[in-house]
Amino acid sequence: MIEKQGELTANNFQELTNWLNLNLNYMDEKILTAEIQMISDGNFNPDLYPRDDNDLPINMFTHFEKPNEK
Image (tube, rainbow, N blue to C red; front, side):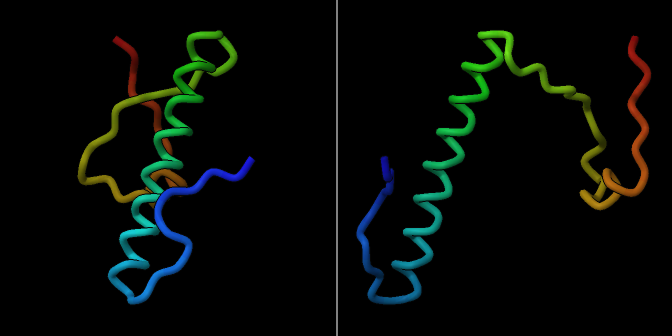
């Protein structure tokens, strides 16, 4: 089954950008819905933890410390 949003062709860069954003948002919604369903079914238990807003994403890969649980 192929799922898509928007038109099949883009006549300019703005239409292409809009199409890409629309499809990425649609895919993100589908992934979120699947994760919620898997969590409620007990098949998915992500290890979530808070991080400082000023941490760069690369820091998560180079230096990882899990905060102390209180």
